Image (spheres, helix red, strand yellow):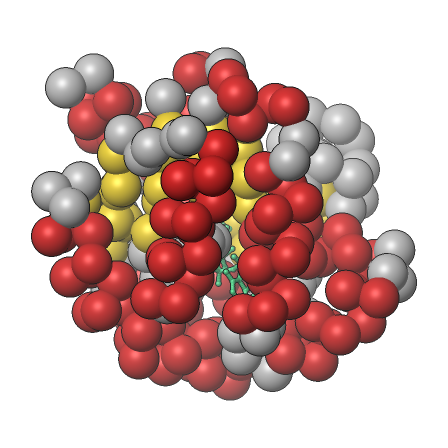
Length: 214
Ligand code: AP5
């Protein structure tokens, strides 16, 4: 199964993708996670991307294309994948299409997780992320069993630098500038399914699972 998850920051793309990837036995490709790993390791990509990320802006398409090509060169994508965080604009959608064409791949499903601004701000300003396995928590919606530590691996939890309210608003603005073109692009291919992501995570997951079986 090859799925693209679209949606605003905080809609729950990462939360859903992690569970779904395990259930379906496919790779979870999160461009945000790959970038954050590069920042942590201070790679050249990480150094070039960090400032854009901290300001809530998109990392330039050229850097993202190279990163994505490298990721799609790995063998695990043959089993299928859930792409979370890419594409973010039409140029990226076309890059993806070209990668798929060269690899003889096609997308089965594009799920657009929609969420309201107030829900997004509440979710992101309370999000905690595991420094080891990048599992997501929320101080009130999805608290860890032991405060400050990941239930899955025991890693310490931290708040992302781009989860400050001002940066969240910037990310939303950037997202809104690009999203309608992307929706149009995938609607024309008859692959787009729109879901409200404001409900409980388990309910949203059930709705996505139904789509994977159609
Ligand atoms: P990225 O990491 O992709 O961030 P994002 O798209 O802004 O999305 P988020 O990770 O913030 O949100 P999410 O939808 O995954 O929500 P989550 O599941 O965590 O990108 C970060 C930056 O990297 C970008 O700003 C950009 O600079 C750069 N970048 C990445 N990709 C790029 C690209 N393609 N091109 C250029 N630049 C790129 O959930 C959020 C919180 O809510 C969590 O606390 C979770 O526990 C909670 N939650 C989730 N679902 C529910 C629910 N249903 N009910 C209650 N709480 C919930």
